[in-house]
Image (tube, rainbow, N blue to C red; front, side, top):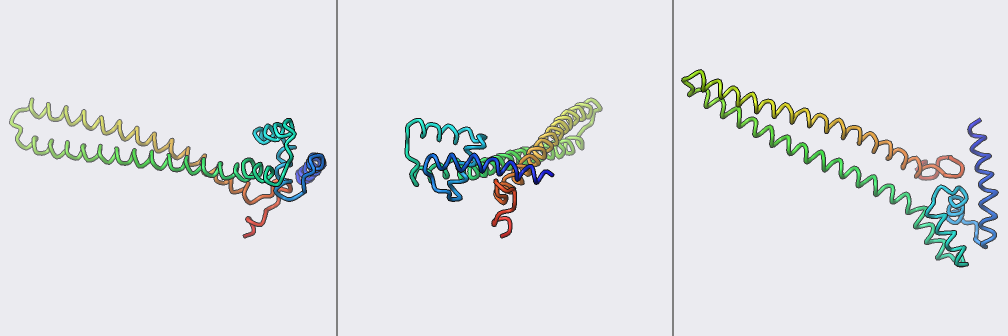
Length: 191
């Protein structure tokens, strides 16, 4: 039943798209059809605005104008989405590397604290001195515990971000391998 609804919607959009192309004397090529199909759907506000502006200025829809619209609003939109995703992945990776580096330095500092405690504990003669050393060690251990909890929280947030990015990758992949009109896999999907 859903497939029938998709087909009837596609036919309805086809009946709206072709007249828009005909009144502007535009050839029905796949790239031109993609532009006007998106225009009729109306979800690409920037494309709709650009075409309305061209109409207002009575600009002829030459091959160059159509190619520019296609590159900027149809093929460019996919490229922009991929670039945005790439930037997001890079940011998450850089944040992770920074946190890991900071955590590594913290662990190194704590190891030095333990080594210092060990050497100082060997030379302790009074109970008060040992008590001071233990208080210092407890304070450093608490700092390390807080840093570890902070790291765990950061890793959980990064895991959520990576899950969102995986969803975006799947969405972009689906868009790249599915015909927007028929919702059937395109050649890229078969390749």
